[in-house]
Length: 146
Image (cartoon, rainbow, N blue to C red; front, top):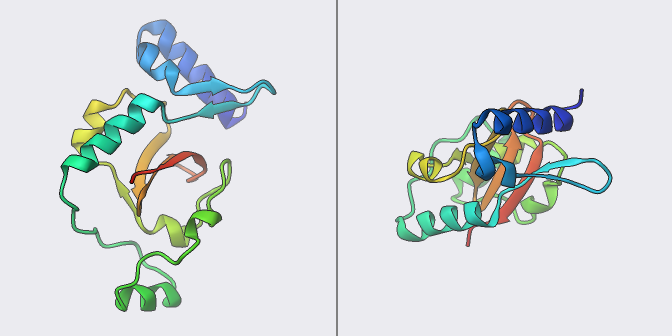
C-alpha cells in the first residue's frame, strides 16, 4: 500500500468512526487518475493567514545545522536564497537546506484548524505555509502567507 493510499484509507476509516468528520475529509481529494492529494483547504488557509495578520513577527528559532555556504549567508543577515521556492515541488521531498528554516505553526493556530491526517504536518518556511508528510518531508501542498 502506498503512502497516498494509506492516507486515503486512514481518512475514510477515521471519518467512518466519527473522528475528524467533514473537516478532515475536506483536506483530502482524489484526482481523476486515482491519486490522492492532501491539501490545505480555503478555510485552513484563511485561518492561518488571519492569525499571522494579527501577530507581531516572532523571533526566528535557531535552525538546524546548515552547510558552510548557508551559514555564511545567515551570518551576514541574509535570508533564504532567492529562488528557494523553485526547489520545492509537489510530491518531492523538500531539500534539507530549505527544510532547515521550517518552524512549527503556533499552538493557537493548530487549535483553530481541523485535525490533520495522521503522519502529516503543516509548518512555516519563510513566507510560505507547507503541508508535508512528517517522516519524509514530501511536499503535499503550500501557499504564500502574505
